[in-house]
Length: 491
Length: 70
Image (cartoon, rainbow over all chains, first blue to last red; front, side):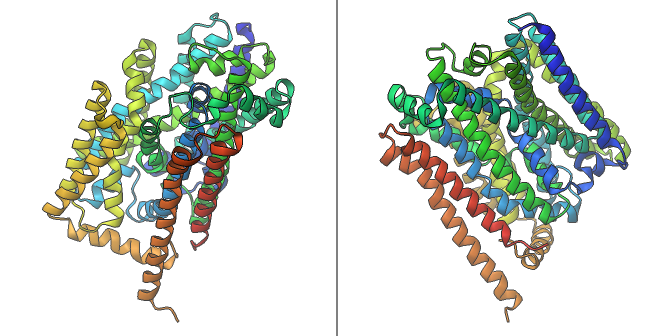
């Protein structure tokens, strides 16, 4: 494909997104709350689309399709166990939302710091979020670089795609903060779902003789890929090691848990959850079936991650559809990148910068905008190096972010949970996550995520039992929450 | 008439039931494919099971949020 068409497709996509971002800026008010949370006034429909676009990255159509290509149906189980983890939002969503509004929290870590009456907790969690999420962001940038370079047969340099993605993400995050991110996310989620469904149907009906025939071919020629553990990758310990950290994604990853602060009402939050669950089920099935279609049409690729790029560049996909698919996958990457940048900026501002005595909202806002650019540049630098370390840290991100889970459960469901319990749980869990991941340690064959969760939970409970809880703050926090939960009939 | 204390107890009881249901559902997503139907190489085995599992989880989540009142 000539570079001209690739640039043209990107140009049209960026133009529409930027138009929306500027439209979002109209009528925007001043202040931190407006910038980072869009004034807690996002409607259900936009919240649902934005939550979907933020959650699902380029991993789905590339990584998950690749998992399916090499590991079979276990990839579907893995991603659907993640989706079932949204049940956590049915319990935690309204709790985050209620206390967020009452105590004016902007970052989820700020909420934990206040609940445990301790400033070290948000500081530690903010550092850990930066350590794990910047490499994750870099991998998304690299994805856009590889995609543009691959589709133009190398005519577009890898770094050109990375730079375009970085500039676009910075712009869409800076133009109107959460509002421009949410609006552009909405556009991008629609592109993601429409494009992926359309191309899957095109491949299945044009080249595989319809779904019934497609499944019959799978059962006949690739039967092993429909069994569990399948061709070998998805044995039980791998499955558990992958699914456990992802099950808690909706509360452990700040770029999505912060979204629980933004709906304008409980009804809007309901719409957000409904919309996301529908989106998630369709997008998961499409990504997995896409991986299976690559397996049927192009078996024997050396690298499973190449399944999607190879299929898009093959004779099975017309140029125009390949371009549209590239835009769909780029949209998935950029909608995740700008949300992570905005959330990390809010976390650095509220949980680090503010605690060094900078109370002024204006100075926090100015600093936050600089942080967005700095984070993007660090991500760009990481992506340009293409180090193995980045991939390892990116994979470790869902494991590393697990360390906040016991503290989040404790904050809402255990009055006697203590700040020391939370701090030691975060420290011990982070140590296990990083050490096990880098040293490749898997006691009894179980992956680092399993041990991180076990250790951080046990330490949290034991230290909390042995230390003094912040009774006054816990009573204020849980007292308010319980009366509101009762009033609003929330389980 | 339901008093405040009773209502709180009812919500708590309901919450426990739902959590138990989710635990059973989630454990099934591991046990059934890995212990019972994993060896069947058909689209109607693990593929269908995990899809139905997800639909159950989605419907259950939707049911819980219908309790909420603004």
